[in-house]
Length: 345
Image 1 (cartoon, rainbow, N blue to C red):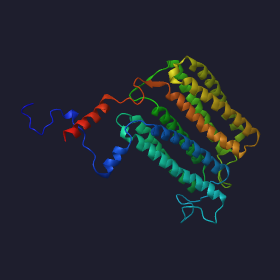
Image 2 (image 1 turned 30 degrees about the vertical axis):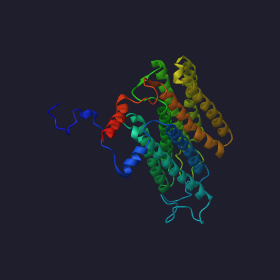
Image 3 (image 1 turned 180 degrees about the vertical axis):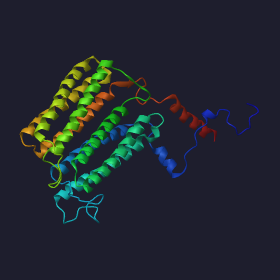
């Protein structure tokens, strides 16, 4: 090493990365570099906000307020907010649009809370990024729905995206409580297969429910089209996979008592079973009472709650060997190198 020049670093792999300077550098260093309590709080807010907006979106359709703001992104031509000439339907529709802005703020804060963890926790970065992109896509689809006067096919796609966002958010909540590094299956192959079959039953039940909704009386506007399906027949078709799902969940819950307690699968399969019991009760009640608005809206929120509970079960099939929030050797070495670099100066 004697022949090297005085300015050369004999070990470039340990050289500290260039320091970020200026205002952006100071802001970057203020962002969290570990999973903190605030990170987990934001993860729960991401999940809750994506569930809540399903309820407000359902209220828009169920009260016939789908065209309360007949333009997009403005409420009316030349006005971002409802005008005095518009009705209470406009307030409901505009309120749902405003909540989308809240979702975007929460999504941005969640993304910023993990952006510095991209190297050590890439899954958190990817999940928050997917959440933000999904919300933007959902807003665009909502605008197209208004422009085309609430076609039932697009309204159904709108709900599918909402369910996907809830599943993504539930996965994010599960991962912020997990450790870094590769994940391995911690249950038997049979239990994993049963879980995936149950997941398929959840997806089928929700999708048929969306088709049934497109045939029902709550179109979002008196002039909106329906998909032409027989609602009485499709109520029965919707019930078939729902009861299969209930049977599968009973077996899954019983089998969960043979899984490692640390996975908490007993709790999450029990939660899944509880949501299904309430969902079945509400579904039967609404069908026998002429589909009252309140019950239909609860049924919609329970549908995405079912998706969230199923996602939680799937996410707890695997575990990591690393303890929660344990830094990797590479991540731990960076502060030490930076500290040595500062002292040398």
